[in-house]
Image 1: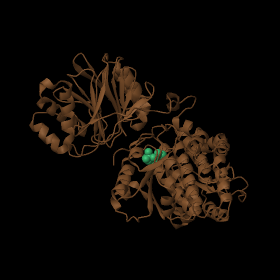
Image 2: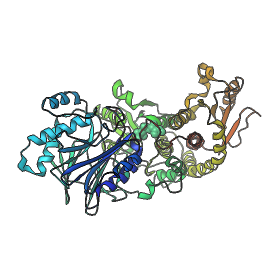
Image 3: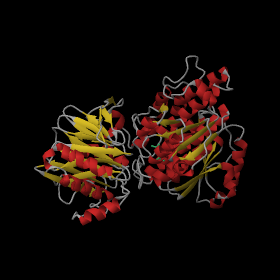
Image 4: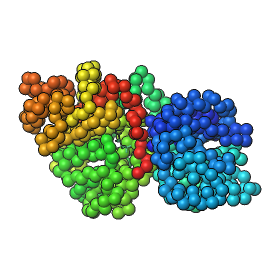
Amino acid sequence: MCGIVGYVGKQKAASIILEGLKRLEYRGYDSAGVCVLQDGQLEVAKKIGRVENLTKEAAKHRFTGTTGIGHTRWATHGGVTDANAHPHVSSDGKIALIHNGVIENYGQMKTFLTGKGYTFKSETDTEVLCNLIAYHYAKESPGAGGSRFLESVRKTLTHVEGTYGIAVLCVDCPGEIVAARKASPLILGVGEGEYILASDASALISRTQNVVYLKDGELVHVTPTAFFISTLDQADVSPVVDKITWSIQDAELGTYSHFMEKEIFEQPVALENSMRGRFSEDGSTAQFGGLNLTAAELRQIDRFLFCACGTAWHACLVAEHLIERFARIPVEVDYASEFRYRNTPLHSNTLFLVISQSGETIDTLAALREAKRKGYKALAINNVVGSTLAREADGGIYQHVGPEIGVASTKAFTSQLMVAAMIALYVARMRDMSFSDGVQYVNALKGAPDLVRKALLQAPHIRAIAKRYAGYSDMLFLGRLSLFPLALEGALKLKEISYIHAEGYPAAEMKHGPIALISEKCPSVFFAPNGEIFPKIVSSMQEIKARKGPIIAIITEGAELPPGLADEVITIPECHEAVLPIVSSIPVQLLSYYIAVERGCDVDKPRNLAKSVTVE
Ligand code: F6R
């Protein structure tokens, strides 16, 4: 949610931190701040609004120091005010802190600290944590130097209930940062004579591709010449330096107006990357390197349980359809946030899978941990290499679509659909799917990027439709079978970036309630692909038309609608059932995007949202 950047090196810290914050803005954007250690002081600038506001505010300060921390906030405790923005400085002026997460027992700590004479300028849990570090720092033996700073952070964290990713400065320790994490991502970039801390690789990729992923319960002490990792109970940890495989260009807009637009148009290549190396030599099935399950174990599986949140949950619903349809294995799908508290009965041959682009969504992580605690193998489909989810899962499948920066998920979603289709194929071929059906299925998946390219050619037509529909306040999205999840996804995309109220429904269910909403003021977007069920979908459209509801129909090539039934028609290529949800995603992504642009919305940073939801 919030973004963290820290810098220790030879350059002026403030400009490097501001650049990092700009790249992290998609994680949270209600306020931002920076603190630089210079001339024996903690110099702070913070401002509500975007990083742009902070940059203007920072220009009023003379930031010269080479050690600093910065933050973009997504408010949890306390409203959106300059005072509540991070960094916070302890009331004795010794410690500055930035924090992602939630400190649950901050109330008790605040009472304790107030009794000790510490004062507070904000309503945040973070300022309480900051003062508690200052309290422990004051109590530690002054002779201990940098380790006094480290130990005061360590001691504080042993009293903390909740989640955190923190970076801390101490006025007495120039060139040093102490950082730690529990359930909030934190990465240390190891550059040429400098270290950059960040909650997300995009903030440090312009300076280094060498990174250390910190684990939960670890602290890192960064000094000008080295870094040391240890655990909360003081055990030393040998660092593993990994290399980020994508580059700065992948995290830049290029010629596009928004990251969402760029990511929509990147989908053909993203799908190719998700498939690369994942088909058997005989071309009849999929293969995965990291499942950590033998073929015999997989054959034993008689039930799948998928968990995720938001768009990734919609991908799970498509997985359900494909696995049940092609492999004939029952699949259950649950919201990760519900699963963790529902105490769902699990059977011994159930395979538990979570889907998450970021791999940091707290509810999805909690669901994975709950399944593991119950003794189940828990696998993850995940995009961000080195994410907490990737490290905690028993195995899994990386999506390999590069960084997704637009808050509304697009390329990660279609890649999740592709991985789901490959899993369905893999387990189907272990059971009743024939060699020739497998070959046909594989060829269909391989053809998906070109079909998506073809669907993207509809962009100017969809843009023209968007202009006509941008003024509505309500919209319905209707689909059946594997395209019912697409109706949910279409509605989510539209509401999150354009603020138009939208609902997704199974097309035939519409007459059991939502039809009451239909009038000339409420358009419906119908998925109407060619096939057995096409006449039924046409009947649902007739019911809408009879009530004067405008209709946007997404049909496949060759499907023939009765003349005049749809007000707008978008045609996508005819495709295999396993590929249909992927190709059908394109028109609804483009429609939502162009409607939001038409309404003047901030597409990449919709209000109240953040890219990865690391609080419950
Ligand atoms: C919507 C969207 C969100 C995410 C959800 C889960 O466009 O992006 O609904 O899908 O927050 O995020 P991940 O996949 O990172 O777990």
